[in-house]
Structures are given as C-alpha cells and as structure tokens.
Image 1 (tube, rainbow, N blue to C red):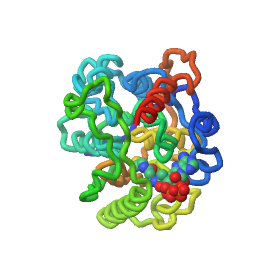
Image 2 (image 1 turned 45 degrees about the horizontal axis):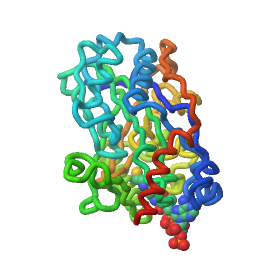
Image 3 (image 1 turned 120 degrees about the horizontal axis):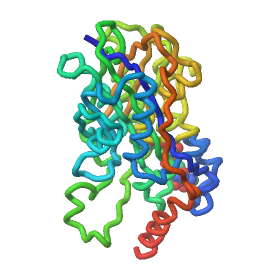
Length: 360
Ligand SMILES: CC(C)(COP(=O)(O)OP(=O)(O)OC[C@H]1O[C@@H](n2cnc3c(N)ncnc32)[C@H](O)[C@@H]1OP(=O)(O)O)[C@@H](O)C(=O)NCCC(=O)NCCS
C-alpha cells in the first residue's frame, strides 16, 4: 500500500512586508537582505495560524475531489499553533467538517511538514487509515524579535496542505530519511514557550529567538545533503533520475550550495524564498503548490525534497507524483478581508521589541 498525494492547497495571507518596509524601523537594507538570503518580501498574517490552515485545507480538499467526511486524520505540522491545549488540528478538523477524522499536531520545527508527511504516509501504508490531510503552516511573524536584524528578516507567514489517499500504485512519499544533529539544540531556539513560560512573570516575559546563523547554515547544508544521499542509496534511485528538487526555503544561498553539492542544475530546483521568505513548516507545501501552478510538476515525476530546522532536525523524502497535476474542483475558500498593511499588523511587536531593548 502507498499514499498518493491527490490534493494540494496553499494559503499566503494578503499583506506583504517588503525588505524596504523593514528598513523603515531596522538598520538593514533591501540590498543586504537580497544578497545574503535571496529574500525580497514575506507575507504577514492578520489571522491566527489555524485560519490559514483552514483555507489551505479546504483548497486541498476541493483539489482532491474528496468529501471532507472521508478524511480519517489531519496532522497539523507547525511551530506556531494558536494554543498548546487543545491542539490546533482539532480546530481544523471541526472547521472543515471532517466529521469522521481525528487530528494531532506535530512540531519538529521547520521540518514539521516533511515529518508529518512521513507519519501520515506510514499510517496509510500500515493500513490503519485510508485518507489523511497533512498541513505545514506558520504564523512566524508573531514570534519574531523585531529588535534582532540577523533573524527577523528571514521569516514569513503561510504554508499549505496536501491530501493523501491509499493506493496500490507506487506513488506519493516512497521513502524518507529523518535525522537529528546531536547537541545542536541551542543554535536555534525560542526559550520560554511551553510550560517554561508558566514559571515566568507573564507581563515581563519577552520572547527572543536564539540564533546562530552561520552554524545553522553549515549544519543545514551538511544535514540535508547526508539525508538526501542516504535516501538515494537506500532506494537505489540515482541523482540523475531526480526530475525536480523541492528543498526547504530558508536562504537562497543554502539552496544553491546544496544543489551544487548534489549536482542538481538550478532549473531542476524549486526556489520561492524570494516571495515568501522562510515560512518554516510552510515552505515545502508552498513550493509544491507553486511548482504545480507553474506546470513544473508533470505526471509520473520523481521528486526529492529536503528540509532542516531547529533541533536541529533534518530530513529528505522521495516523492513519486501521480497522473493528475490540476485540481479536480476550484475552491471558494478565502481568508477574511485584511484592512491593515503588513507594517501595521506587526507594529505592536515592533513596539514591544523597542520597549524591551530600551529597558535593558
Ligand atoms: C543569517 C544569515 C543570512 C547571515 O548571513 P551571513 O552571510 O552569515 O552574515 P553574517 O552573520 O556573517 O553577518 C555579516 C554582517 O552583517 C550584519 N548583519 C546581520 N544581519 C543584518 C541585516 N539584516 N542587515 C544588515 N546587516 C546585517 C552582521 O551584524 C555582520 O556585521 P559585522 O560583520 O559588522 O559583525 C545566514 O547565516 C543564514 O541564512 N543562516 C541560516 C539561518 C536560517 O535560515 N535559519 C533558519 C533555520 S530553518
């Protein structure tokens, strides 16, 4: 048994924050950000993460042509759920009318979509479920420390969802290799979230991303390359049989370095970090949806995906696409209208960063 990807949908909120917008309140420039990262803009959400996930899921369901009642499981891959308890997946199960489904959240940081895709696929392969929705979605803008220019410029909001369905054909995520780099937890962390936060004085609490960009860069390239090579040798698929490479979108230079080491021509690589920045768990489903819209994914294509994130977690996945590359039905799912600019949406977080650093 395999788990074919039969539906896909993305959601990028409408408000866009350009590099020049950031340069109005931070010592940075469009030139620096583009040359070091390839990022030109990021989307900023005016709604909670669950709402972005609802829209992407409804779009994926319409695309697949299934009834929401046929879904057995929804896995919500994210670092930015609305709340810890209850999980965010249950909110999405209810919102999309998946009355026969259960759901759980999965957080392995930026790799959450790939890890969730692996879990959902393996549950279908094992026969315990037949149909699953796997989501990768983030609202990272609310987590940013807008006083830290090395990390705040890197991230954005958005993501997507896919529908998996049991099939006897060898399609979907054929195999995956998931890794954790030992003793690298401190390189990328958000201390204080979760139960540790309960020990803090809530009013004075200020979340600030711990971030060692250069070390992450090196481990990201090495970790993804090792996972890709392990996976290729395990499956017997050669590098030149890969027709499209869909990597995590954190930094254009990371993608280019990895592509060079894997000997992939850039025309075989999906790059959309310029439009969305790093949407963490959202990058791979966004990249998949864009590649489908642009006609870059064709019937029967063999694809490789790779990801890395806090932990540091890494992984690679081998995907065999099915026959269909167009949605079966168009979706009417939309976000509520947004009447603020991206700068207006993040202004309270910018003010809070100012207050925090002035008081230091
Ligand atoms: C963060 C990252 C873009 C930094 O690029 P880099 O080429 O390594 O840049 P450096 O850290 O060497 O910084 C170079 C200089 O630019 C400065 N700088 C940092 N951020 C800046 C910004 N937004 N604007 C202008 N200057 C900036 C630094 O202060 C430093 O100045 P200095 O030399 O006077 O100290 C890069 O390391 C990266 O992308 N790492 C991966 C991180 C990541 O994606 N994490 C997410 C994991 S999912």
